[in-house]
Length: 87
Image (tube, rainbow, N blue to C red; front, side, top):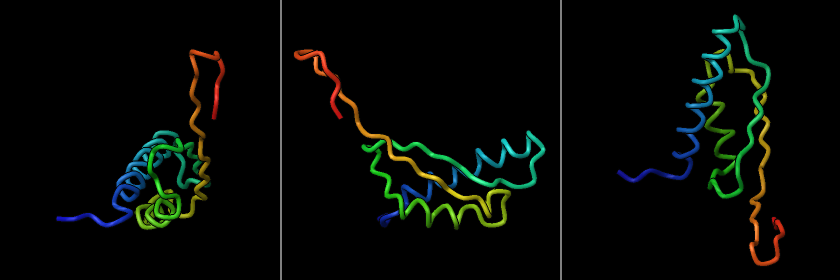
């Protein structure tokens, strides 16, 4: 079976919905207003595919109307030779 583009993001979206739904239940919240994600630049996550997958995964859950905020975190490397950080 060959998985098409977005299958990685669908799995991530399902995990996000599962986690935030568990937190909402534990805290006694009936709905989730927003979710803020920090995603590393090298994760190979396609933001548009994640957003689409999230809408599908969140349907009929406390996260159904949540706003998904995605922040891409740049890669930072440290050079031993010059003792500097670079992005």
